[in-house]
Each structure stands twice: as C-alpha cells, then as structure tokens.
Amino acid sequence: GEDVEQSLFLSVREGDSSVINCTYTDSSSTYLYWYKQEPGAGLQLLTYIFSNMDMKQDQRLTVLLNKKDKHLSLRIADTQTGDSAIYFCAESTKTSYDKVIFGPGTSLSVIP
Amino acid sequence: NAGVTQTPKFQVLKTGQSMTLQCAQDMNHEYMSWYRQDPGMGLRLIHYSVGAGITDQGEVPNGYNVSRSTTEDFPLRLLSAAPSQTSVYFCASKGALNTEAFFGQGTRLTVV
Picture 1: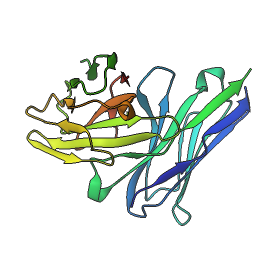
Picture 2: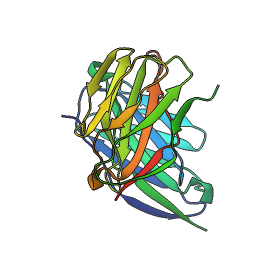
Picture 3: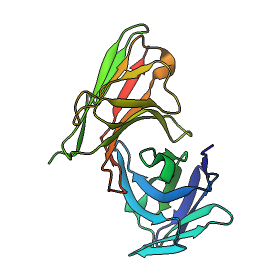
Picture 4: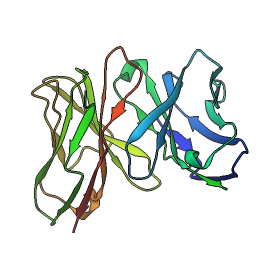
C-alpha cells in the first residue's frame, strides 16, 4: 500500500539551512510533492519532482530524490521566519493519478 | 477566478446531526477530493471523484457521503455526526493534465 512518513518537528536558526526528510513505500510513485501549510490556511504546492529525476532546484529550495531508498528531502537555504509552517511530503502514482497521499507533516520552527 | 471555495469555514454540530460541507471550483478541473486533517496524521483521503457522476472511496470513507452531479461542485455529507469526525476538512481539485492540486481554505468542524 501507499504510506508516507516524515518526522513531525524541526527547529532551525534563521539564516541556517533546513532539511526536511520524507520516506515513502510505493515504488510506483510518479510524482512527489512538497506542500506548505501556514497557520489557519490551506495547503500550497511548493515544488514537485518527477520520479525519473534525482534533483530539482528552485531558488532557495532543493529537492533530492533517492529512488533506491525511497527517500525524498527538501532543503531550504537561508531559512527565514516566514518559512515557519508545516511541510507535507506527498506522492501520487500513475495508477492513481487523481489521488495524492500525504505524510503527517513536519512542523518547521525558525528561531530568530 | 476564485479557485477552490469551501463553506462554511467553521461549524459546530451536536452528535447525531447531519450537515453538508460545500466545495466548489471554477477551474474546470476533473479531479476533486476531500481530506481530513488531524494532528500528527497528515491529510487522509475521505472520498474523491475523477469527473461528474463518478465518485470513489479513499482511505477513511466511513460516516461520509459524496456526490458529483456537476464538474464544479463536490459536497461532503455527514449523515450522523460523531465526535470522532471533529477535524479540519480540506477540499482539493486537480486538472487531468496538471500536477498541482489546489486546496480550499478548510472547514473546521467540531462535533460535541
């Protein structure tokens, strides 16, 4: 079945890099996503990566995918207080393209 | 272009009451989904739809009904509310050719 795991909390100092990790079980995952949820708000897509890619960079965000270990990470460079939020890892597969399965979310706290 | 609109934003129900959470999207998306968000559990899929007239069960469908009579609307019905259904509910939509799921702002439901 499909399962996505993340650690629940991460705390970093402003200006440092944050690395949020995620593992998934479905080897047929096609898309892997990182969503951000600010307090009291819905989810916004930060970035995504196709399963045939190893890395994707988008400004301060770097996504690394290790397909062999089914491990996904999100690195935020120069973390700012505005980055404090819950970050969700999610996956979807070709066979269930319409379903997106989410991890439990990692709550990132940025200390000024 | 409003995106995904959920109503109401907040609701308190008594055990055994019924109600419908509304979700509407104006992006002509084929796929629509309902999730519930509980602390430490991420978003769990309740029901989803791949188009008008087609619905299917997600991970936690018990106690909820859905229908998709139009492309735009995907209401979620609680027939007899239970305290275990206290949660934050999110509706999402996605186009068949899109990778991004767009989320509503959420409905915070409390069942007493």
